Image 1 (tube, rainbow, N blue to C red):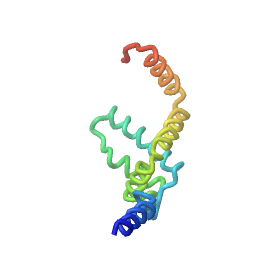
Image 2 (cartoon, rainbow, N blue to C red; image 1 turned 180 degrees about the horizontal axis):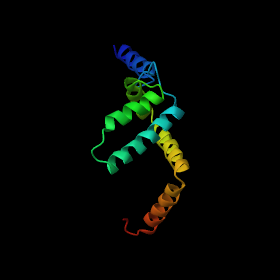
Image 3 (spheres, rainbow, N blue to C red; image 1 turned 90 degrees about the horizontal axis):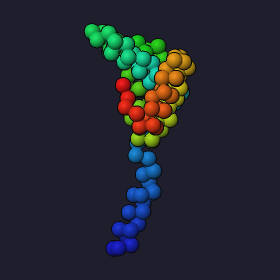
Length: 121
């Protein structure tokens, strides 16, 4: 009986190699980084112009990349669970810094101040 239980435990451990199945329409990591960068820019626009419709901007971004909202959500969940979202976020940050070189210096200044322990604005 003990051996039978042990066999089932090992079968259970080795049969479940992934916590989540790969989505059928998985968004490529490079495209995901572009979309995340554009969503961040959209968020900043909505921060500046408070009475704008954020949902319309999000739909436009997804449509411009030919991504269905459900596919984006499933891909996002997949990358978070697979612990690949940090790399995608870093790629998105690089895309944003290329689009706005002033932001690159701003980020470097903030990081330098944080290292020195100076209060941030």
